[in-house]
Image (cartoon, rainbow, N blue to C red; front, side, top):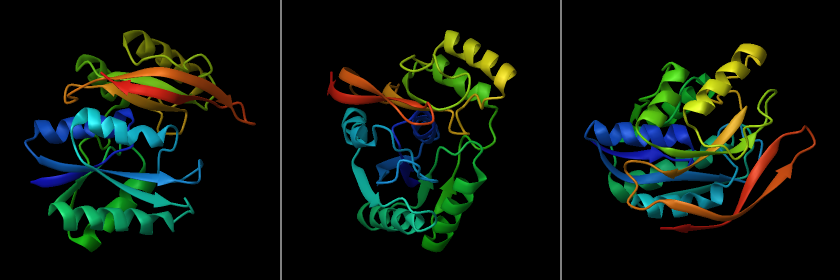
Length: 225
C-alpha cells in the first residue's frame, strides 16, 4: 500500500516507519507538523525544525504542516497536511507511531476515516519495554533531547541502549514514569536507523531549563554524514 508516515523525528514515529517498510508498504513521504505551542496536545515540538534534515538523511520527501497548536483546532491543520500528501502522492494509508495515547490515535483515526485512508498503528498497545528493546536490537541511534518527569533528571543527552533501559526501569519502579515517555516524561531524536541512507551528527547544542524543572537539549547545528 502507498502510505505516508506521521513523522516527528522521535523514536516512535521512526520505529513505525521501520515497521511499515518491513511490511512491504511503499512509503511515499513523511508528514511533519510544526507547532507554535510547545505544549501541544498532539505534536512533538523539541527540535522539530530538524525533521527536514532527518528526512533528507532517510531519503524521503517531507510534507510540512504548520499549526498554532491550539487544542482540537490543531487537528484541522493535521488534516490539511494529510490531505495535501494524499493529493500529491496518491497515498492510501497513514502510519502513526501511537503506542498508548488514545487521545492521539482516536483523532488521527477520525481524520483518516474522513479522508478515506487506512490508519496503520504498528506499535499500538505494544509492551513499552519491548518498544525500547526493539530500538536497541535494531541498532537505532536515539538521543534523549528532553526530560520532563520525576526521576528523569539524569537522562538528558543519553542514548537509548541497554543501560538506559535498565535505568529507566528503576525510575519506573520508583516513580511510575512511563518507560516509553508516553506521559511526556521525555522526548527523543533519531540520529540513525536501519533505513537511513546517511546518519546525523550533532555539532552544537545547548540546554534550556523551564520553570517546572524540565530540561531540553536544543540542537543548534548538525550535519548529515
